[in-house]
Image 1 (cartoon, rainbow, N blue to C red):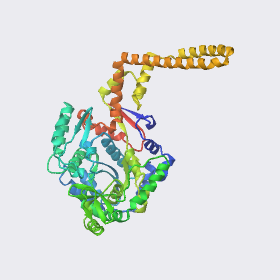
Image 2: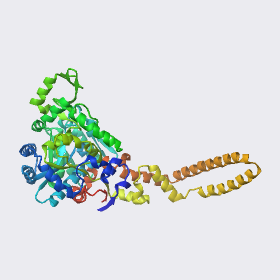
Image 3: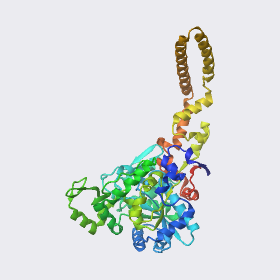
Image 4: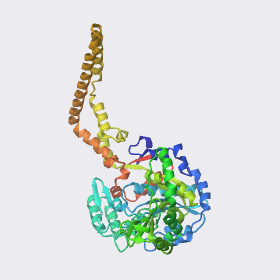
Amino acid sequence: MKLTYIDYNDLPFIATRDLHYLKQDPKLRPFYTYEPVIEAFTQVIEARKKHPVDRNLLADILLRQYQDRSTEPHTIAQIEQLRAENTFTVITAHQPSLFTGPLYYIYKILSCIHLSQQVEVHNPDYRIIPLFILGGEDHDFAEINHLHLGDKTIEWQHPMTGGACGRLSLDGLAACIEDVKRVLGDGSFTEEVISTLQECYSGEHNYAEATIRFIHHLFGQLGLVILNMDEPEFKATFKQFIIDDLIAHRSAQLVPPVQAELEAAGYPAQAFVRDINLFYFSGNQRERIEQDDNGYLLVDTLQHFTREELLEIAEQHPERFSPNVILRPLYQETIVPNLAYIGGGGELAYWLERKKQFQYYDLPFPMLVRRNSAAWLDEHAQASIRKGGRPLTDYFVANTDALIADFIRDTSNISLEDARAEMELIFKQIMDQGQSIDSKLSFPIEGVRVRMNKYLDRLEQKMVRAEKRKQEPAIHRLLHNHHLLFPNHTLQERYSNFLPIYTHQGRKWLDELLPYFDPLDHRFLLFEA
């Protein structure tokens, strides 16, 4: 396996804020607490010690969640370690995307595991657990119900798409697995993949549990612990935050001024802040809460509560409330003794809006670490790129027109620049002669010169189009190769699923990638199998 490191500045489809955070631009420095460097973890640990969580509750719930799973002994041992005051976590999180969705799902988990190992090596008196939090309370089914295998899209059709995605039944997933089987074809590990999917995504448990079982199958051996925060006991620890949001709308006061500061520095707001940043669970339905003159309203069903009624429910049944993206970071950090959050550029963008929110509630703000980004080229992709005859770095452009233009220029040498230069000399002579006769002749002479340049431009464009038709097979390969790296005009990791790779590589692929996924090394990883 060959690895090439690429500077993010040379990579298309990367947001400006993402680049600036990776390069530690001073304009962003007021919005986070710790620089993402290994030396800073000593300070992070000391700060986290001052803010204890209910470790026994966390361990007890994790053990309960794992009791019906096929679990390695070391996973249970790691969970038990969380009871100790010298044990902390680094966290990554994501929605329950179908069969992990895009590749970055895999990459962010590898980044989390590697960072936990790295922090523990540099702080040997402490145990560091890599923790994946499943965002099973999210209700945007359209975001999680599909995956892309090459150019094929597999989509989950479910009879009920409202409410928390993690609470959905497994109806319709057997058909998805059959679709995956057809698309993957005969690979060395296809049978293992299909068998694992069938085992994880069947039975009486819900979709969140199925997703966790699949992630555990992939990463349990590498030390990952997985937590589902959709638990009544966890919501009870968050009760005062829920009541405060319902009554005082504190986040609606704290977050927008920070967003305004970021916008003044050139970074647009990421998350829309409402007066109430909670949803209400009624069965599996997750409804937004709004306040009106007479109390509170559930937006979808129009169910109404008086102020006293809803606050009583919050006091007695906090599990009926679900934090949105504005409150979710607070919820997470009240439950887990966490040091760092590993996420993509979009995730860190909304975390950068949260520092004052954390300060108000006297919660430690974790280190924000940008996960590794990567691309994978198998043997077939590499062969296609070699046949294209262009250096691999030529494909790192957002606009394929530029790629084609460079190819045409290099292979056909179409240029009328010499003709333009000669024409300019001729018109200079004509202009000099005309002005010597009558200065008013300069205007018609200049008009002819401009028209001639336009004619040359049109002629050159026709020559380029003719050359493109002549070179159509080669251009088709160029576009195909660009699509391998940037499918659907985005980074490969944001579109393609990992299963086609795993089908041919097996779990050794994850083992081999892990040492290279150091999220404190801010370079793009390009792997060639």
